[in-house]
Length: 259
Picture 1 (spheres, rainbow, N blue to C red):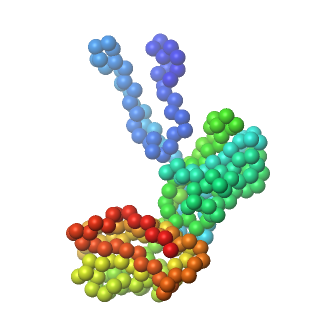
Picture 2: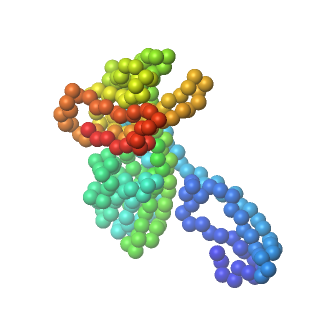
Picture 3: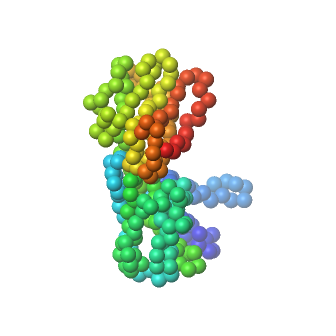
Protein backbone atom coordinates (compact mmCIF):
# COMPACT_ATOMS: atom_id res chain seq x y z
CA UNK A 1 0.00 0.00 0.00
CA UNK A 2 1.06 3.59 -0.47
CA UNK A 3 2.66 5.68 2.27
CA UNK A 4 0.60 8.31 4.14
CA UNK A 5 -2.47 6.33 3.16
CA UNK A 6 -4.58 7.75 6.01
CA UNK A 7 -4.54 11.20 4.43
CA UNK A 8 -7.47 11.81 2.02
CA UNK A 9 -6.53 9.78 -0.99
CA UNK A 10 -5.62 6.29 -2.05
CA UNK A 11 -6.11 3.12 0.03
CA UNK A 12 -5.54 0.85 -2.95
CA UNK A 13 -3.68 -2.42 -2.55
CA UNK A 14 -1.13 -3.72 -5.06
CA UNK A 15 -1.20 -7.52 -5.43
CA UNK A 16 1.95 -8.82 -7.11
CA UNK A 17 1.92 -11.63 -9.63
CA UNK A 18 -1.79 -12.50 -9.44
CA UNK A 19 -2.67 -16.10 -10.25
CA UNK A 20 -5.97 -17.70 -11.22
CA UNK A 21 -6.34 -18.82 -7.58
CA UNK A 22 -6.48 -15.15 -6.57
CA UNK A 23 -9.78 -14.67 -8.42
CA UNK A 24 -12.06 -13.55 -5.59
CA UNK A 25 -13.90 -10.64 -3.98
CA UNK A 26 -11.63 -8.47 -1.83
CA UNK A 27 -12.94 -6.17 0.92
CA UNK A 28 -11.25 -3.00 2.20
CA UNK A 29 -12.56 -2.05 5.65
CA UNK A 30 -11.57 0.96 7.80
CA UNK A 31 -12.15 0.88 11.58
CA UNK A 32 -11.78 3.54 14.26
CA UNK A 33 -10.21 2.97 17.66
CA UNK A 34 -13.42 1.43 19.00
CA UNK A 35 -13.48 -1.03 16.06
CA UNK A 36 -16.51 0.67 14.51
CA UNK A 37 -16.58 0.51 10.72
CA UNK A 38 -15.95 3.87 9.07
CA UNK A 39 -15.83 2.69 5.46
CA UNK A 40 -16.15 -0.55 3.54
CA UNK A 41 -15.62 -1.24 -0.16
CA UNK A 42 -15.38 -4.37 -2.25
CA UNK A 43 -13.42 -5.18 -5.39
CA UNK A 44 -13.98 -8.22 -7.61
CA UNK A 45 -10.72 -9.51 -9.07
CA UNK A 46 -10.90 -11.83 -12.06
CA UNK A 47 -7.55 -13.20 -13.19
CA UNK A 48 -7.63 -14.31 -16.81
CA UNK A 49 -5.30 -17.18 -17.67
CA UNK A 50 -4.37 -18.27 -21.19
CA UNK A 51 -5.83 -21.71 -21.83
CA UNK A 52 -4.61 -24.51 -24.09
CA UNK A 53 -6.60 -27.68 -24.77
CA UNK A 54 -5.17 -30.90 -26.17
CA UNK A 55 -6.38 -34.47 -26.60
CA UNK A 56 -4.96 -37.12 -24.32
CA UNK A 57 -2.30 -39.06 -26.20
CA UNK A 58 -1.06 -36.08 -28.22
CA UNK A 59 2.66 -36.19 -29.03
CA UNK A 60 3.28 -32.60 -27.91
CA UNK A 61 1.69 -29.27 -27.03
CA UNK A 62 3.03 -25.72 -26.97
CA UNK A 63 2.58 -23.60 -23.83
CA UNK A 64 2.75 -19.98 -25.06
CA UNK A 65 4.71 -17.25 -23.31
CA UNK A 66 5.70 -14.19 -25.34
CA UNK A 67 7.32 -10.88 -24.46
CA UNK A 68 8.21 -7.65 -26.24
CA UNK A 69 10.90 -6.80 -23.67
CA UNK A 70 14.58 -7.42 -24.34
CA UNK A 71 15.79 -9.61 -21.48
CA UNK A 72 19.33 -9.40 -20.03
CA UNK A 73 21.75 -12.09 -21.14
CA UNK A 74 22.11 -13.43 -17.60
CA UNK A 75 18.33 -13.77 -17.09
CA UNK A 76 16.91 -17.11 -15.99
CA UNK A 77 13.70 -18.52 -17.48
CA UNK A 78 11.96 -21.08 -15.32
CA UNK A 79 8.82 -23.06 -16.15
CA UNK A 80 7.07 -24.68 -13.17
CA UNK A 81 3.80 -26.51 -12.60
CA UNK A 82 1.20 -25.80 -9.92
CA UNK A 83 3.08 -28.04 -7.47
CA UNK A 84 6.18 -25.87 -8.00
CA UNK A 85 8.04 -28.69 -9.75
CA UNK A 86 10.60 -27.43 -12.24
CA UNK A 87 9.40 -28.26 -15.74
CA UNK A 88 12.22 -26.52 -17.66
CA UNK A 89 15.07 -24.16 -16.73
CA UNK A 90 17.06 -21.93 -19.10
CA UNK A 91 20.05 -20.05 -17.68
CA UNK A 92 23.45 -18.77 -18.81
CA UNK A 93 22.54 -19.19 -22.46
CA UNK A 94 21.53 -22.87 -22.30
CA UNK A 95 19.04 -25.38 -20.91
CA UNK A 96 19.67 -26.80 -17.41
CA UNK A 97 18.24 -30.35 -17.55
CA UNK A 98 19.83 -31.31 -14.23
CA UNK A 99 17.44 -28.87 -12.52
CA UNK A 100 14.33 -30.45 -14.02
CA UNK A 101 11.93 -32.64 -12.12
CA UNK A 102 12.33 -36.27 -13.21
CA UNK A 103 8.78 -36.40 -14.61
CA UNK A 104 9.68 -33.73 -17.19
CA UNK A 105 13.21 -34.76 -18.10
CA UNK A 106 13.54 -35.33 -21.85
CA UNK A 107 10.01 -34.04 -22.49
CA UNK A 108 10.55 -30.28 -22.87
CA UNK A 109 12.07 -27.93 -25.42
CA UNK A 110 12.45 -24.15 -25.87
CA UNK A 111 13.52 -22.10 -28.86
CA UNK A 112 17.07 -20.81 -29.34
CA UNK A 113 17.94 -17.13 -28.74
CA UNK A 114 14.91 -16.93 -26.49
CA UNK A 115 16.19 -13.91 -24.50
CA UNK A 116 15.71 -11.62 -27.47
CA UNK A 117 12.27 -9.96 -27.62
CA UNK A 118 9.97 -12.75 -28.68
CA UNK A 119 9.08 -16.27 -27.72
CA UNK A 120 9.62 -18.00 -24.37
CA UNK A 121 7.07 -20.69 -25.20
CA UNK A 122 7.66 -24.24 -24.02
CA UNK A 123 6.99 -27.41 -26.02
CA UNK A 124 5.85 -30.22 -23.71
CA UNK A 125 5.98 -33.74 -25.13
CA UNK A 126 3.40 -36.40 -24.27
CA UNK A 127 1.16 -34.21 -22.08
CA UNK A 128 -0.79 -36.36 -19.63
CA UNK A 129 -2.38 -34.16 -16.96
CA UNK A 130 -4.46 -31.00 -16.77
CA UNK A 131 -2.31 -28.49 -14.91
CA UNK A 132 -1.34 -24.82 -14.59
CA UNK A 133 2.13 -23.98 -15.86
CA UNK A 134 3.98 -20.80 -14.90
CA UNK A 135 6.73 -19.08 -16.90
CA UNK A 136 8.89 -16.87 -14.65
CA UNK A 137 11.85 -14.74 -15.71
CA UNK A 138 14.45 -13.71 -13.09
CA UNK A 139 17.40 -11.34 -13.26
CA UNK A 140 20.84 -12.04 -11.77
CA UNK A 141 19.62 -11.02 -8.29
CA UNK A 142 16.67 -13.46 -8.55
CA UNK A 143 14.17 -10.61 -8.81
CA UNK A 144 11.17 -11.43 -10.96
CA UNK A 145 11.11 -9.56 -14.27
CA UNK A 146 8.07 -11.29 -15.77
CA UNK A 147 5.56 -13.98 -14.83
CA UNK A 148 2.84 -15.58 -16.96
CA UNK A 149 0.50 -18.52 -16.51
CA UNK A 150 -0.93 -21.06 -18.93
CA UNK A 151 -3.72 -23.51 -18.09
CA UNK A 152 -3.30 -26.78 -19.96
CA UNK A 153 -6.39 -28.96 -20.23
CA UNK A 154 -5.79 -32.54 -21.34
CA UNK A 155 -9.07 -34.06 -22.47
CA UNK A 156 -9.59 -37.51 -21.00
CA UNK A 157 -10.26 -40.65 -23.02
CA UNK A 158 -12.35 -43.73 -22.30
CA UNK A 159 -9.93 -46.59 -21.71
CA UNK A 160 -12.62 -49.19 -21.02
CA UNK A 161 -16.34 -49.03 -20.24
CA UNK A 162 -18.11 -51.88 -18.41
CA UNK A 163 -21.89 -51.57 -18.41
CA UNK A 164 -24.88 -53.93 -18.29
CA UNK A 165 -22.58 -56.80 -17.25
CA UNK A 166 -20.30 -56.55 -20.28
CA UNK A 167 -17.58 -54.44 -21.92
CA UNK A 168 -18.65 -51.73 -24.38
CA UNK A 169 -15.83 -51.70 -26.98
CA UNK A 170 -17.70 -49.31 -29.28
CA UNK A 171 -17.39 -46.60 -26.62
CA UNK A 172 -13.66 -47.18 -26.12
CA UNK A 173 -10.95 -44.86 -27.42
CA UNK A 174 -9.33 -46.46 -30.47
CA UNK A 175 -5.84 -46.18 -28.99
CA UNK A 176 -6.84 -48.74 -26.34
CA UNK A 177 -8.72 -51.12 -28.63
CA UNK A 178 -7.74 -54.77 -28.02
CA UNK A 179 -5.32 -53.67 -25.27
CA UNK A 180 -7.58 -53.79 -22.20
CA UNK A 181 -9.19 -56.48 -20.12
CA UNK A 182 -11.11 -56.78 -16.83
CA UNK A 183 -11.80 -59.88 -14.78
CA UNK A 184 -15.00 -61.89 -15.01
CA UNK A 185 -17.64 -61.50 -12.28
CA UNK A 186 -16.00 -58.22 -11.24
CA UNK A 187 -19.16 -56.97 -9.57
CA UNK A 188 -19.26 -60.02 -7.31
CA UNK A 189 -15.57 -60.11 -6.42
CA UNK A 190 -15.11 -56.36 -6.10
CA UNK A 191 -11.95 -56.55 -8.17
CA UNK A 192 -12.19 -53.75 -10.74
CA UNK A 193 -8.54 -53.98 -11.80
CA UNK A 194 -7.73 -53.24 -15.43
CA UNK A 195 -5.08 -55.09 -17.42
CA UNK A 196 -3.41 -52.84 -19.99
CA UNK A 197 -1.59 -54.78 -22.70
CA UNK A 198 1.56 -53.61 -24.49
CA UNK A 199 2.09 -50.41 -22.41
CA UNK A 200 3.90 -47.63 -24.27
CA UNK A 201 5.35 -44.21 -23.47
CA UNK A 202 2.15 -42.38 -24.35
CA UNK A 203 0.23 -44.46 -21.79
CA UNK A 204 2.03 -42.64 -18.99
CA UNK A 205 -0.47 -40.67 -16.95
CA UNK A 206 -3.25 -40.87 -14.35
CA UNK A 207 -6.08 -43.34 -14.77
CA UNK A 208 -9.41 -42.91 -13.03
CA UNK A 209 -11.74 -45.82 -12.24
CA UNK A 210 -15.23 -44.52 -11.51
CA UNK A 211 -18.33 -46.45 -10.42
CA UNK A 212 -21.60 -44.83 -11.51
CA UNK A 213 -25.14 -46.07 -10.87
CA UNK A 214 -27.98 -46.13 -13.42
CA UNK A 215 -29.09 -42.63 -12.40
CA UNK A 216 -25.66 -41.22 -13.23
CA UNK A 217 -24.65 -40.70 -9.59
CA UNK A 218 -20.95 -41.13 -8.84
CA UNK A 219 -20.60 -43.81 -6.14
CA UNK A 220 -16.84 -44.07 -5.72
CA UNK A 221 -13.59 -43.79 -7.59
CA UNK A 222 -9.87 -44.35 -7.38
CA UNK A 223 -6.90 -42.96 -9.26
CA UNK A 224 -3.75 -44.80 -10.32
CA UNK A 225 -0.64 -43.10 -11.68
CA UNK A 226 1.10 -45.16 -14.36
CA UNK A 227 4.60 -44.32 -15.53
CA UNK A 228 6.10 -46.27 -18.42
CA UNK A 229 9.89 -46.17 -18.21
CA UNK A 230 11.26 -46.42 -21.74
CA UNK A 231 11.71 -49.70 -23.60
CA UNK A 232 12.01 -52.62 -21.21
CA UNK A 233 10.97 -56.25 -21.26
CA UNK A 234 7.71 -56.84 -19.43
CA UNK A 235 6.52 -60.32 -18.57
CA UNK A 236 3.48 -61.22 -20.69
CA UNK A 237 3.68 -57.65 -22.05
CA UNK A 238 0.87 -56.53 -19.74
CA UNK A 239 0.48 -54.34 -16.69
CA UNK A 240 -2.33 -54.49 -14.13
CA UNK A 241 -3.86 -51.21 -13.01
CA UNK A 242 -5.11 -52.22 -9.57
CA UNK A 243 -8.40 -50.94 -8.21
CA UNK A 244 -10.02 -53.27 -5.69
CA UNK A 245 -13.40 -52.20 -4.44
CA UNK A 246 -14.80 -53.32 -1.08
CA UNK A 247 -15.99 -51.78 2.15
CA UNK A 248 -12.81 -52.86 3.98
CA UNK A 249 -10.35 -52.07 1.19
CA UNK A 250 -7.25 -50.38 2.74
CA UNK A 251 -5.84 -49.30 -0.62
CA UNK A 252 -5.35 -45.49 -0.78
CA UNK A 253 -7.15 -43.40 -3.37
CA UNK A 254 -3.86 -42.36 -4.93
CA UNK A 255 -1.36 -45.01 -5.96
CA UNK A 256 1.83 -44.94 -8.01
CA UNK A 257 2.81 -47.71 -10.38
CA UNK A 258 5.76 -47.91 -12.74
CA UNK A 259 6.62 -50.46 -15.43
